Image (tube, rainbow, N blue to C red; front, side):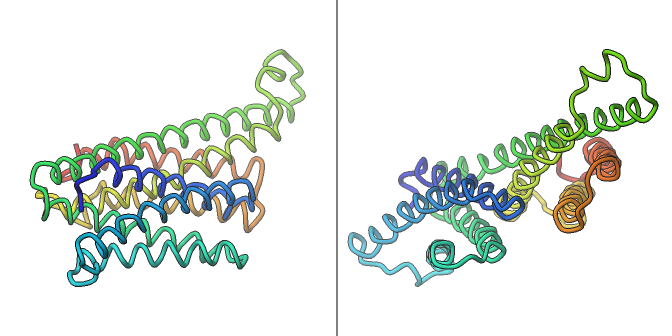
Length: 272
C-alpha cells in the first residue's frame, strides 16, 4: 500500500492543514477557515477512498482483515463521518476532536504499515515523521515567541499610557488592541502545530527502534506546554480575559516554554 509514498505524505499534509483550519474555526468561529478545512478534508477523503477502492477491486481484498488495514478503514470512516457532520450539522466541538483522533489513527496506520511492508521506503517514511515532528514543534515555538513579543510590547505600551509618557516610543509600539489581537492569533496558529507535532512524536516513538518513555522529561514538558497554551485559549475565549491580565499569563507561559526547551531537553533520555 506504500507504493505511492508521496501520496501518503500528501494525505498527512492536507489532513494537518485541515486540522489547523478546524481548530481556528473552533476557537474563533471562523466560517472561512471552516470552509477551507472542509475542502482540504474532502481531498483527504478522495485520496483515502482511491486507495480503499484499489484494495477492493484490484487486489480483491477488503481492508479489515489485519489490524493495520483495520486502522486505515477506521480512519476513512472517521473522515467520512466528519465530513457529513460538518456539512449537515453545526457541531464544531465534535468535528474538531473527531479529526484529531482520525489524524492520529491515520499516522499510526501509515507509519506501522511502512515498517511492515517496505523495508527501505518504510523506514524512510517513519524517519520523515521525526523530521516533521521536530520541524512543526520548532515552528509552533516560533509562533509562541512572536506571541510573547506582542504581549511584552502590549505591557510596555500599557505602562507608557498609564504613566502618560507621550513620546515616539508610544506611537512606534502600536495600538493596544492590535497588539493583543496579534498575540492571540499567533497562539491560535501555534497550538494546533504543537498538537500535531506531539502526535507525530508519540507515533514515531512507538514505531521506531528508539526507546520511548511517556515519563521522559521532554515528553511531559511538551505536553505541559500544550496544556498551558490551551489554558490560555480557555481564559481568552471562554472566560473573556483580554489585555494586561492575559498578556502577563502569556509571558509566564513563554518562560515555561523556555524551561521545557532548554532544561527538560537536556534531561531527556532520547531527545537531542
